[in-house]
Length: 94
Image (cartoon, rainbow, N blue to C red):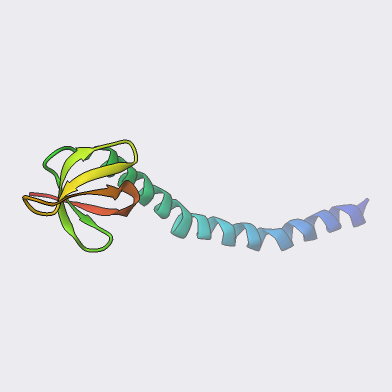
């Protein structure tokens, strides 16, 4: 009986550092990335006509019409392009 209790204690003792490392990894890396991705998705879904955004390529454009997967955006008075929503980096606040 005593051998089994000691064996269970040593298994728990050897797994405890791995569990602690995973918990630290989760709270320092995984969770903040999930929160940032959620905020970015909410920002993209809230875009409206007239908002100015920056693309991943560094272009500053004005939203003409948000669509399902794309955004129609105006580069200047004459040029309107379609941009994939995944390539919107951030919204510029006026």
